[in-house]
Length: 436
Image 1 (cartoon, rainbow, N blue to C red):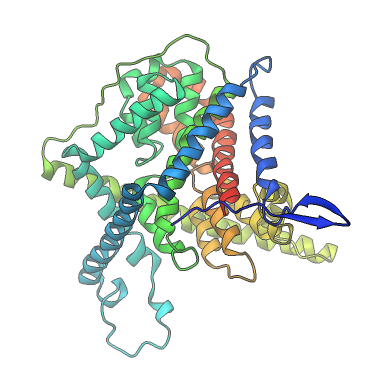
Image 2 (cartoon, rainbow, N blue to C red):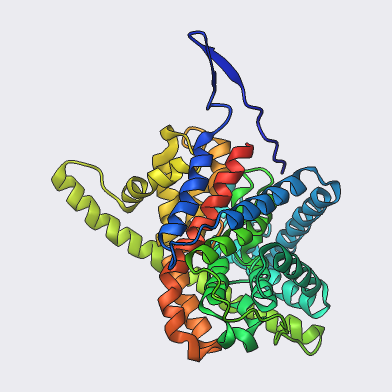
């Protein structure tokens, strides 16, 4: 993975020097302005002028992009993580092939004419969640993952001027899920201001859990080289964007800036971490698999109905086509060429209304005739988050259990967090598009 900004080219048109937008994608700049403008429109206090907040956020995101591009040890670290994830994939196949035989990836007892037909998502790919969840729990117990999260929390606190509890909850979302990360600050949830609570919710929806990183990387690697490095960068990049958008929507009110952030996430031993991590992985894996089955079934039913309506009107009609119409302007604004916005808009719509797993599967099924590598890379970032209707429902349920006294606030803030999470990932996509 490498981001190298394009050099702008000046060209002559009838004796006048102009800037070629083919070499400097001004669409992305328009998208950045539009995203922060929409956040300001949905703000509870439109008298604010958040120019300093926006400037500092963009500077931090630019620093992240430059760091993963030009700082050798960070680039080396990303490559090492990529190799580690490939190791996890191979290790998972060892387990699934032992339990499920050739269905789990072991040698087939017959001649295989189509290798792709042997890839069974539910048996070979979803179990990666189990292994990743168990490893994450062990690394947390050993202090390795905890040290990384605490370091990122400190950096976010200094860079974004948010409280220690809020920064720890936000940083946790880089590696953990939108439900797991708030557990780190569970004792403080009921004391957070509405603005701080929105930050926790928005960052949760603007990132993906570490338990699914390996799956997404495995799905996207064939069409986007270095997919895991991009996904890790997307999680890092979207957190400050989500914090800024949340702070614009609900400006600091000075009610609370909690700095003492302990954590209730503890394990008694490595064995306990392994056991609980595996149990958590089972729950996540079953939920992901069940959600895929039910959502795809419901989409099929809806598409059949839309097809009948479309036949009566003499046009092709499906959810994908409708999503393409609705989200095409957004796709164009973040840097997708106009010839590809219909396909890109459909993917962003699928991610928002259904989930990012299905959207990534659809993205992996595209080729150069549908989307260029640049467009696919932008979309990887723009869709790298849990901002969808199903995840919002799960987040409301999870946070309400952890902070029952704040249930009314959580429900009231949910629509803003969904919009904020989507805008944060699209902001990351727009910024990366400027570098490609």
